Amino acid sequence: MSEPHSSNLSPLERVFEQLDNKFVSWGASGTLLGVGISQFAAGAWKRGIFYVVGAGGLWVVIKVGKRLAPKFDEMLDWGIGEGEAWLRRTWGLSRFEQQYLQSQGYLCEEDRIEGYERTHKERIPLLEEVFVPLELS
Image (cartoon, rainbow, N blue to C red; front, top):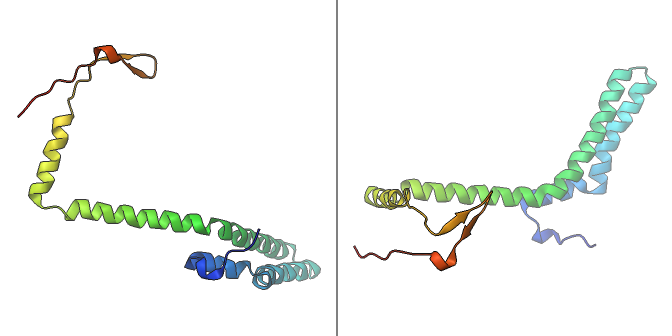
């Protein structure tokens, strides 16, 4: 499987691509691992374990981040879109429009649905007995 061309990547994906570069990935993790091993040699076991675990954690974060970067971008785009839609709904409508839409919602709150049979967890419409009253107002 070929690597995606770098110009097609989002900024977040480019960051993780750079972090996953073998020199950086193994360099940063390798440096921490080397420091951990030197701490073991010096007899500082607790500090050595800390550095070795840190090296492994950094390597995992880089690998997982590279895989999840596209999902992060999608979630960020979704969140921004939802926030923009909320702002438009909240402040983009005039007071009259808000009241009108709210009154339309109130009209539907107490609709009675007729012509269906309710079983355990589903509703089955009785198509021969469906009646939709038509009214003009």
